[in-house]
Length: 206
Image (cartoon, rainbow, N blue to C red; front, side, top):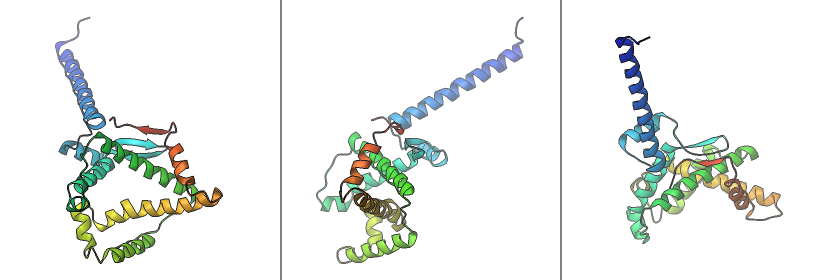
């Protein structure tokens, strides 16, 4: 039985829409997972949708966080601070891989901290930050300006992305050493093994 022309047109239109949608998804996947694009559209979509860059257990490392960490690295490599320290490293795929691995490592630390009931409060972070500012005051009078200029961070970014992971890892290292007859490398050994397990998935390709 022949299909009426109106229904045929609707079927064709529907099929074309599906093909276009699939094609758009394929292009978007290629732009993210292969090219690691930071184009405006990709950034906008990643801020709305939980696009994964990797995962460890039930914890997802989002593509938006990968982009932000990559932005920080790029900002630093072109900064006055990098020049003063004679850091002249070409930005390449290996550095991008390092960005992702650092985020996965931090997620592993957070996973372990939750399991071990180890936490860092906002008050502790602020106190630690105050100590850092005091220690740096002789060479860096305005830490806020320094962070923004050389890393693209505000003070809260620094507390959450640097100080909090550092404090968590420090406390976990002490706890693991105490559980391993004083072995100072116990935490590092645990994390190294954890990152090889099957529930650790890297979606980005390098």
